[in-house]
Image (cartoon, rainbow, N blue to C red):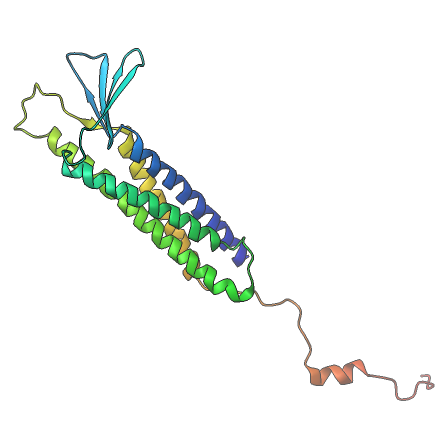
Length: 221
């Protein structure tokens, strides 16, 4: 039962981390980090991501424009690009190493210690990937809040608000950390073996018991 329970926990951790990694990759590329609604033209919604600025019109048409230069971007966008790339790469490494350490993959008995190390390494990769996903998302959210409540900006100027990608990034980062924690727990927990239900009789007692023969076979009582 203990082995079955650890296997289920590992499969659950794999599902959580895979879903979190997919959300992290989607967050990296979609232009939905910030939204801007213009009061002068309510038929258009501006959206911004790490790579593009887009205008979504009421008819469903979308026009996007890439940033002119990487160096001209604000510091939070430049560092967020690097961190999200790092998070996605570490997620791939975590998936590869943790998949090789699952209990459902059968290796020789002497390879069990190697599987534990792979699980532990995969959990660490997922932890770092989750943190590097949460950091840029939370940073962009903090800058957005600061700019929204900035008193030096006139009230007539439109303010950027949270986009859907920020919430996807938060969920993805937490899923990566939670799945990595499951891998680390299963790798560090000891293997419990159930005692056998068959009781063997000591050798000294087996001989006399098994070789009991009547001393007088012809004697009838």
